[in-house]
Length: 124
Image (cartoon, rainbow, N blue to C red):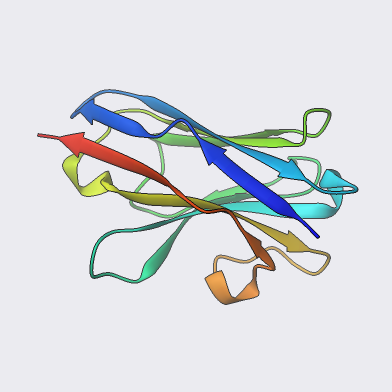
């Protein structure tokens, strides 16, 4: 059983920064590709970024590329999302997810485990 717990969300003004964390309770964290997704009210859950097992590869959606940075600390079983230059359109619930084995993916349906989400609200 894998449990993921996000933290770090909140209210921030446009142009500001937030750092999200996701702590994983899992046997071998480095066995999992980790992703961040977000869901705004009334919209589908969208891909934000993923990072592979040893952090050798990261990938971002076009909407956050250059502003957000995903990282992981396998010794702490934690994945991070540094969000800079935040915009009102970044407002959403942010979820971390774990994908075991297989290839990296930007599709929510490919991920095996999900956290409960953390709210990020950007005021304009």
